Image (cartoon, rainbow, N blue to C red; front, side, top):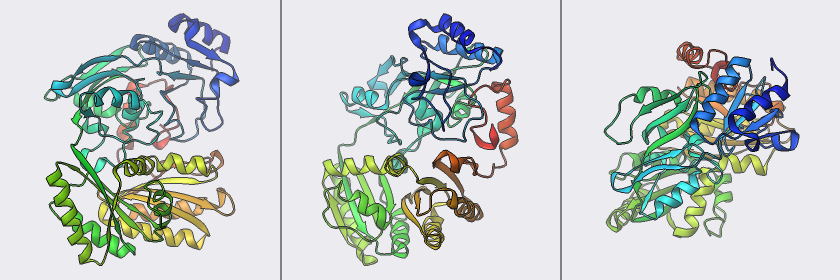
Length: 451
């Protein structure tokens, strides 16, 4: 920092109050990122306070990383510099809630679970199942555009955000969008913030579109046997009139991990496609009938999972990237995005390449939208996996996809850019960064292309 830590602390305390700032190693360990700890953690209680913190930071060259529950802090390159953690956990007011209009506005520190509990009383929900949902805040979910397996039917936060307020490094609070579904004024500005991981500004309030909770839900498990059969099933389902809420391919290793949670006794030892249908009883019955017919066409079997245990399974599937890395700290977790038609092809390639390197692979793939999570565990630590990940990344790029590192030990991330090769939009991204954060104090170096 350009100024002493005690001066920073005093100035920030004058903005948020003495009780809303913590310093020292024990307090700063929680928001630490890849071994780096901030000198202090600031807890604003209003959008205006957050904006003033950013203004002070920009004026004095103090770098800031924003967070809520901390569930997304590990995503990104190791920060070359990290002075202040801006934690929005105390900003959790429900600003407006209109069940009849299917809209709500909340402060960014509102947790996902708190919000769902509120909506459930009126038979509503926000149909997202992001990784880290137990800790995740709505501001962090939107900043990361985080979603899970419900993306198949409902999309991502980008499809549900109607508007927001953003704290900027100029000390301003900027409003985008509106409160009602038909108001799309300023939506482009909001879209810039969604998925920017707090590198352009800090989201302090979000207006959201809500949905009715489905009347019924049912989970069907189709034994695939081989990736070839899984591909045929995927094609048949996507080309049918069915509109599954979730459509996921679990490889044999993932199936063996998930099946006990679903109260399914026997190990799968083969790939499985998990399908969730939602809606009226007629929709569920039709889905069951159609899946039985599609499965018979490729020699597969259909099994039902009990509702309560299946929801626990879906939560684990959506949180797989976090769960896998927590249970295997020396693992590398990758996220591949690709044309859905190449899902099984790339998975087969990844399994073969990993097998050649004696690396164990566990994968969960949203085959309807082309998103794959790969958990890698090597017998000789993480660094020998660097060449493997590099080869997989190049192979996926040739298929029109991209491969990012979601979680890994810092010694691995220091050798591999977690975002991979920047796309053609990097020049525009740099212009946006220069316009919104000209001093480069917001999560510097952590995003695509070192932004």
